[in-house]
Image (cartoon, rainbow, N blue to C red; front, side):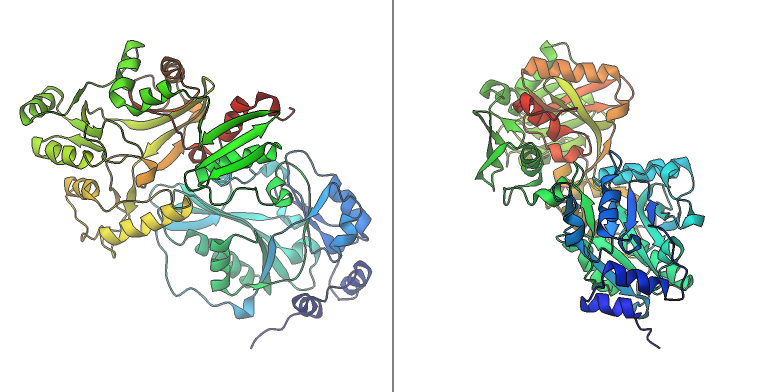
Amino acid sequence: MKAHASPYGQRLLRGQVPSYERLQAQLAGDGSQPHDQPRSLHCGWGRLLIGHTYPDPASLASALLDERPGERDIALYVAAPQQVLAQAPQQLFLDPSDTLRLWFSDYRPAQRVFRGFRIRRAQSDSDWQAINALYQARGMLPIDPELLTPRHHGGPVYWLAEDEDSGAIIGSVMGLNHYKAFADPEHGCSLWCLAVDPQCTRPGVGEVLVRHLIEHFMSRGLTCLDLSVLHDNRQAKRLYAKLGFRNLPTFAVKRKNGINQPLFLGPSPETGLNPYARIIVEEAYRRGIEVQVDDADGGLFTLIHGGRRVRCRESLSDLTTAVSMTLCQDKSLTHKVLANAGLQVPAQQLAGNADDNLAFLEDHGAVVVKPLDGEQGNGVAVNLTTLEEINEAVEAARQFDSRVLLESFHAGLDLRIVVIGFEVVAAAIRHPAQIVGDGQHAVGALIEAQSRRRQAATGGESRIPLDHETQRTLHAAGVDYDTVLPAGQRLVVRGTANLHTGGCLEDVSERLHPVLVDAAIRAARALDIPVVGLDLMVKAADQPDYVFIEANERVGLANHEPQPTAERFVDLLFPHSRPAP
């Protein structure tokens, strides 16, 4: 039999929200056990203030203004938000997020089973560290577990998704039992902080976390689950609509702070810029720097502040000279400049006739082929060990530049170091595109599915091409597009780790070896370039051995969040715009 909403829930769904005074009286006369004082719960990143437990708008506004620095408090179920905002209109704002509710009577179990990961509660220091790394990668606030309201006082519970093969934490979600937290007469609950690792290759992690929370609270006799979702988060809303959530006409209020700026400042002035330009424009906008979009498709914009104008194409700006740009674009010149600076570089020569290419191969055993002037991994083939492979790769590279280079191949990890203003700002190991077998789907289908996930996670900037290089990598591993991999088997499907061809990043900024830091700064000074992405092959990020591969004058700063790449870039252009410490 279908359960019915309580009178208060029915009025919420019709948009008839009672006053503070009436709601307090209803709670007290409901037969439940209401708390006799305002209720707030700490979630590790800030407090949830239960709006209707506060006696009047002034007391709720006062509680929001007590927010601790670096945290984000949220007042929920605010019956009269205009009255709360009127108490401090310069400091508070109405959250533009939507509140959704699922009545458990409407819930239907999943028809598909997702495998390869398990759901369990967070319980150790290493769990919290892994969850925080995930949240920071998603631009969310980290959790301080010491601040959590204890569960026996109605505090939250964090669940995580753990990869069964690697043990990595690939997703997390927070749940709150409202009856325990504030004697909710509706016997409800809520979901917060849903996040999935952007590099995750397992499908369905987000959906399984949501379903797990729903079924957990259903087993506790609760009746509904609420959540808050950004009004423009279409991907999340599609999932929630699929599960049966409906809009709930209630409100949330937050305090104006640096964390919440995107919510109360409104959309930034650019339209159609790619993520690499947008991250810079949004940082400029936050600082009050005027932005003039010149060509959205090309990522071209001009920043204007204090009578100074700087033109940019993503992270390439007027500060980079034509000579420095040429030194990066022409990989043979990059090689000479870095070698002359005493830095480690691979052997290199222009591709020539078959005899020349064969002699180079015999000298080095394995070869890399790349266009002399190329970017985004186009035309690059690595670890070639036969003359036939080299000849095919040279022809493919000539589609991007008639001049093609041969380099000695050096095994190791692909490291990108970002240097801004001759200081290392970020570093990341770039891993090549890979898939995980499920025992059912062919390699080709798994590549296409992973490519779609990478495109969704990067705004269309990353995908796995089904080209000759992908096929060559598969054949080298003894498989083809039609092969069905055993469940859990991982397979690298590209030889290069470029993000534009489906690769992913592992941030290593905090453990970069001092020798690598020094080499990167020396390379940037040798090229005399203020903003550069340097690619090296290394044994490990915390070991000193390296070989420089190339330099990139236009760095994808958005790829290195949460490192402050955009902040340091705008600091470089407009040092007087730096926020006060």
